[in-house]
Image (cartoon, rainbow, N blue to C red; front, side, top):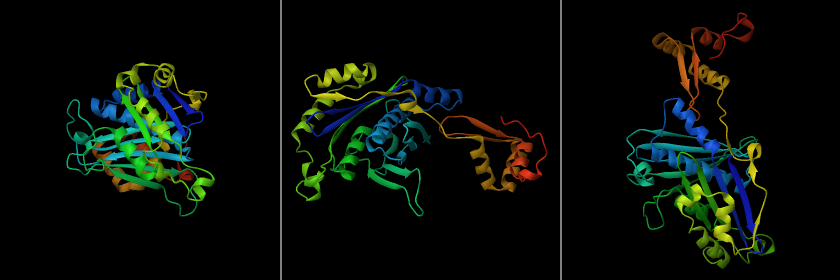
Length: 324
């Protein structure tokens, strides 16, 4: 079962999380396969890493709303998206417009000519009037303009720029599991921060405890992250450290795949297109077919369904068509 483990290092200004998406990640890939729209292997791996990273970041922020992690650029992968709700429900999708070579990394997929970007959007659940989602954007290159090849490097760079917090992130994914480990220096709080005696940016790279723990986290290999259980990973990495673990989050309390698409939402989208355009599609194809980009589920609207969409409820005949 997919699970999220949170922990702190007692007496040290460092926190951490470990996520393992197993059944939920396999369900995502199975749905795409059934729909006949499976992504190339490097794209599947990227989306798995994005799902794991999104869960870690959402749980870290404890944001009341959706966290949307987007990668977009000028390569064969036009867009990759991971969306994680505040209850850790997630979904992912991508738009692939060209051939993705076997073993392609971030630059080859999204950043061929230096135009690749990573955006993180925080969309509040209960918006106040006029409130807009917060969005931060970083390029897919480092401080010396070198192209970054791994999602973990991009997100570490993002956290350093946006939050002024040292972060170590290890991500990996295959067709069975998507997993990630996050270790982060805690922000300066209390009187020292309020008086300006210590600011988060003043401690970048200087906290010895974080540097030591980040070095240990960095020894975790891709194969270990994908094959070892959480207990074994944490014991091997931090067996000499004052680690305090919190109860694992699983099932309805933990990370899981959920798609918010519905026939009602698809119908509303069709109504926004207008009767003439939708009728034109029906004349050409016999019915309207809409597939969800996130879960692969297909919705069909025949001429009777379309007629009902554009007929006020009070004027509809009894015995409407059964949704397909």
